[in-house]
Amino acid sequence: MTTEPNAQSDTTASKSGTPTAETPAAGGAKPPRKRRWRRRLLFIFGGLFLILVILVVAAPTIVSSKGITDYALARVSASLRGEIQAGGLSVSWFGPIQVSDALVRDAAQRDVLRVKHVNVGAGLWQLVTGGLALGEIRIDEPQVLVHFDEQNNVSIADAFQSAQPTAAEPASQDKGSLPDVQGRLVIKNGTVRLERDGRDPYAITALGADVNINS
Image (cartoon, rainbow, N blue to C red):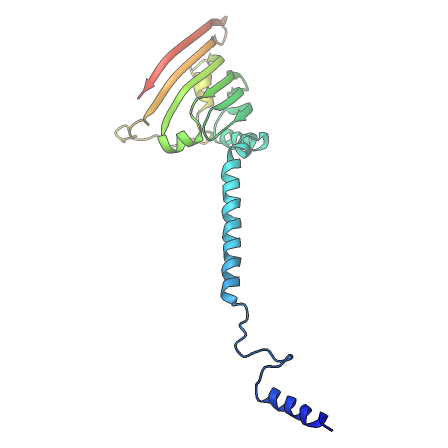
């Protein structure tokens, strides 16, 4: 019978390293692990870059949200004697920046400044790359209360004073130069109300201004 020599020859070929159906050829290449790691790194860095782009694009929307606006103004107000509020804030990268129903109260809870609407022509990108080139700043219906107490302290100035007393600075100390601000200021339908304790108030209405700023 011829079956036994064939079985022996198959066994001998397998042991000697000759490729068979069960044994892969010695030159058979497995997928290189380095390429897999490169692909994984590309996916990871690509995903991180995409997340960063989304955050940058969405940053103005996040800043404009009511919760973020209220939190930021609360932190600022905590450092002042007065209080700052805003009904709404709209921020964009390329403008404009808008504030609605802005309110400032002094330490006695008097409304010393109310503004119906503020529109700043410059966007965040312009402020970041071009400094304080603000474009046109339009202020609609500002209402200012100038209240004098017995010591002739002005309420609106007092509202922006620091809540923590600071040591007096030497008169000779150099405070540095003012920032370079450029733009156009337009005020429409403003009102200034003057008050002093024990006297009748006096109001100046229908105020307007159109001023070019180039400091």
